[in-house]
Image 1 (cartoon, one colour):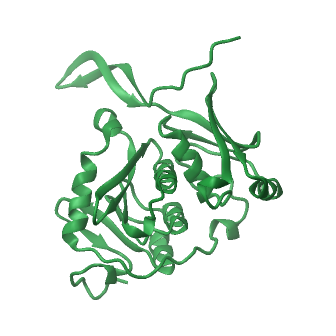
Image 2 (cartoon, helix red, strand yellow):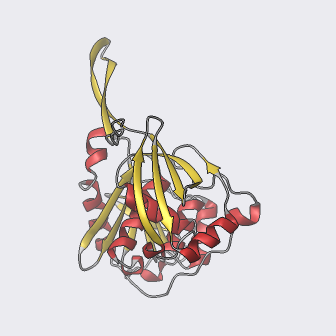
Length: 278
């Protein structure tokens, strides 16, 4: 019997030639790994994504929740991670009721790193109505600043590779509870959603932190999670702002050392904000 293919490391060391100050110098750099990840349900392939090979069971659960293939981690009977020369298969066996629903709606989707809407077959599916998150939950600006500051030191892969996104969850009582990293920003968020679901942590009890820009796909995933507040270090798109507002999500962007900007639902901030904010 052939030896199983080992799971790739999430970061690798490569040779490089650097040019600085008019001089070439040979050396090495640590870069993120990027691996084809196939999501299969009862041996039927649903999607193939390019992702960082880390926290793969969280990825399997979070992606399945975001796709609406399951409603709870218990809807997956088993998860098996199978490495091959071409990539990794996340083989999931669904419980009977979910298996029937999956067979009825089965579709294929293949996309590049962090592809959030690849394979969507209609405009109505891409712009589907989002669940509205519950009202309530408030934060002080100082708490948001503390969360962003904590996130910077809690990214072990990015600390060495400097090219990896993170999605994290911060709670008022516990601080930074979970951090997940991936070369794809959508993948990092799926991994976070899976980790929270598997641990029984309610996303509505804190805020989701993102190291990327905010586009529609991230808002969609956060609305499905049920998180009320999302904070990103970069700016959102106009459509992301519109959908976050419709879903009742407080969207905070451009969160840096010197402050942040609130784009929707400022009532969750316990300090006055500009009147013109929607």
